[in-house]
Length: 300
Image (cartoon, rainbow, N blue to C red):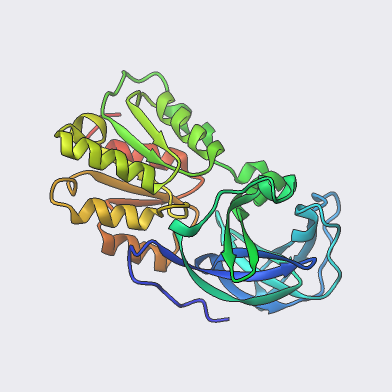
């Protein structure tokens, strides 16, 4: 599969790959997909999580096979179908699926929040829902799926310990992160590092509305001298938020740090073109604090 399709920078659109598991439609951001390959024989790993099928080695690269059906409480996958190959937080993963339907170009503004119409298992690992023709496609949060299987892949909050005990830092920071868990962990980590003047939002749209309000009041520097944003968020993604901030003469001096598990070469080039001041890969929260210190001129 060709995953080199890159949308124009900052359009608030993305391409979602629709696939099937147990007859249900799910989706993943194309930017997260390295390639799709046919099912391959798997070597089981004794003592592994029940959602881990084992490992296999396409092109001499060791890949962990994830039973996506089991993650969704739909039973175990049969030894057939396809693997979606991805790389999150330096982990090479193959998500086992039944089939691929196609690719759709959609706007983040059209993403609906998960509702009671989907199962508890799906709601717990879904970032949103889109409607294509007569069917609903559930966009899965693959980072959360992996964090649930192996909590050590989550934010390395222990790395913030070296920043604890510093004097209070009142520089205002605005955070845009749709994951409630990650939002809380980022806020707690920054707080431990001395940053106390924090405002957090659930997506880029909420963040931009606040920035516009403060901009028009002439109080932006009092509320947000730095913005930390994820990339993949409903309503408005982090790239579009960055574009809006950096294209407005009244807000472009605001520091923008992109903090996402999606930082690869293509995404880094996009962020640079949009004017991001720094881009860091989750789960390195310690590096995030250090980079913010540097950008804001805070002494360690």
